[in-house]
Length: 324
Image 1 (tube, helix red, strand yellow):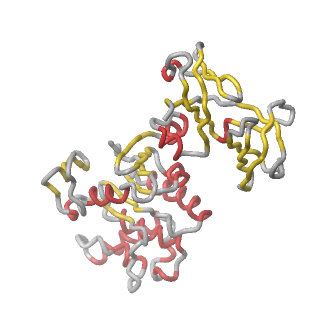
Image 2 (cartoon, helix red, strand yellow; image 1 turned 180 degrees about the horizontal axis):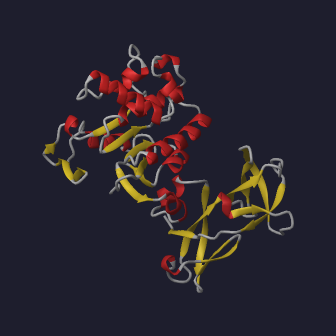
Image 3 (cartoon, one colour; image 1 turned 90 degrees about the vertical axis):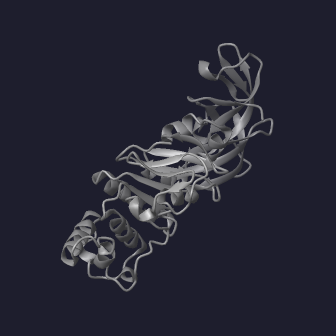
């Protein structure tokens, strides 16, 4: 895994997969048993060697922000600037609060701010010493969903404007997509794919990544000459790289956006369940065989549970896996 200067990386995975442990190892809080960690070409961790955390030039934004309640916001940001005079530290802290859009709250205290504002104060405090890398541990978990998505975009803009190299951990894929350039999917302590969001979605390296990212299901198929794969909904062309022998039984990944609603289609599926998502419904549908699939349908198509609707297969990126 390599994160280039000025890029934003993310470790994504379910709870307990090891994301935060990796962050602690980068900080120098955890020794490593194998491999190496380097920051700006300087070796900071290897088996039997751990450079002290204070010598690593790493900034951290904690999950609970860890702001000092008895200090004003500008004093909180200035706290890590002890190498400067008090006057210089406060001036620099004010500049960083300005960069995160909070120059008007310098003299206020953390409890007087919203959760999103507290997050930005914590960000300014971590960035003020100008670390080589900024680490963010589940930075939006204490915020409501709407604020999370908006703040993720704002923080990405702040990090990019300051050419900051950053790595965050999260279990929320949409949060990762909103902020990161490079995303690593982890499971059971292993990094199984380090890639951009597009490739994670359309070219998953493993069955776990395919299942974890986005909405979708695996349906049975059989490879054909062409190359292509035959599934219950029809025949899909295969990229040559994923083609095996004709007649091989495989599982085909069908995303919710691979199925579209089409009133004129002769192909029918029964609505099993639905989830309203504002502009769309996420439908779970049953085919004639009983095989379930998912479809993202514009919300003005409001169908009842048990109703049959017309569907069409429009899969452009076909992903297959050998039968498990």
